[in-house]
Image (cartoon, rainbow, N blue to C red):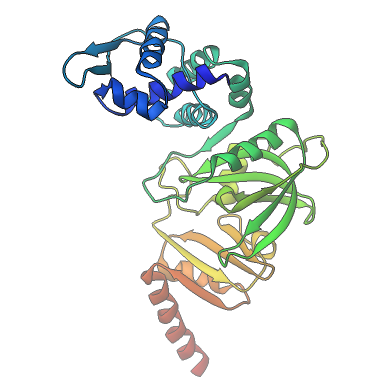
Length: 326
């Protein structure tokens, strides 16, 4: 980006951050002369931004409202944020899906080719509606690295952290970047485990360079939304259309590998915490029923929550003890 263009972007960002800006303060923040500020303000006006001059001891500028949308100035992170936000809006369920798609097309047309490339690279599939639960933040650089590998069909190498912060090297053929219940996931073919896996994006640390290009495999069922919904059924997603609206839902840690647990449960989400441990989120129609379903795994169980699930285990333990005594 040229120096003048970068300065215009910085000036516009400052004008958007507060109502009134004294000219001298703008010059100080931009490290230029007041004359340069006046010249840059004139350039922004030529682009269509309604900048008003106010007089007084601290005379300066303010950004007006009500003008037609002019050509936009975005930095890389803002361009990615706009693309992601508009793509996620297509699954908002608020009747704005078509408008969001048209808005993304409009925004793309007024961006330089370099940023259009970034927007075209970011492809997000929203599975289920957003939730109000807190979600871990994902670095924009991680989203771009994963999206680029998906777009270019290149093997992705990364470190993957468990809940104990132990990072394990992984090699995958990345296929889709998705959101589920407010969290970001990568759907990929795991080259070392020879199976489909889902990875939380906030636990991914990309390694460079990427591996060789690959021919994408066909996802089971052919539809990423159906695939993710089937894998995550029972995970926290309050959408009434998700097929996972269980009245009782709990979370445990099992002393078993995630791939072993996944073979015997189609309704839960098993997340690897290490080579021989996994976190499992499962739903059922009752707390005793959920405890019994989890008890079928021949492994030690640590209840993460909620308290009702722990109480159900205690209740079943007493019942089973009486049955064994009789």
